[in-house]
Image 1 (cartoon, rainbow, N blue to C red):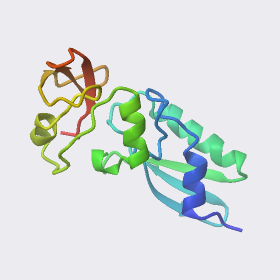
Image 2 (image 1 turned 60 degrees about the vertical axis):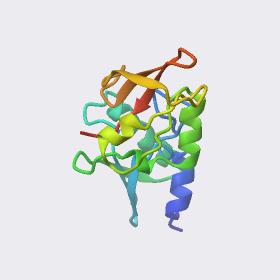
Image 3 (image 1 turned 45 degrees about the horizontal axis):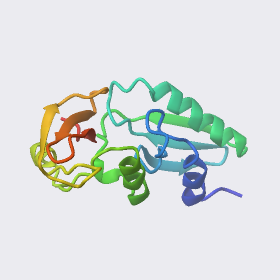
Image 4 (image 1 turned 90 degrees about the vertical axis):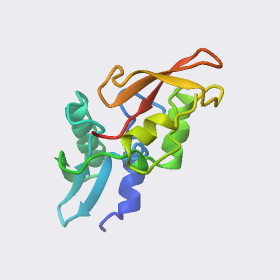
Length: 159
């Protein structure tokens, strides 16, 4: 019997983002189309950033997970379909918040709006300033809260 897309997503929810273990690759919005064929499952993987160093690790973890459920797989890395913050699930945003990331308030697709409508994940103050458009990885920006003094990160949309 062929597994449903929902069942496959449940399997893949056990794979954490390598840098943020509070969030799965599914909840991070990195799993795109899923095709179930007679003998294999094809998974579209959408990196949060084209230069993400964890892509090969994620591909291997997806293949291993599907093998554990008795399926061969093909993981296709899609560099043409940009990852978007809108793809993160509510569970993903909660995991990011617990990990200390800011939650965007503007999903208009305008990068400047996303960066200008940011609140501190600790105290929720909007009295913040952008310290660097690049964080520990190019897909993140670093902010400082003027209310509580915390430094925090925000996933930014692809430019």
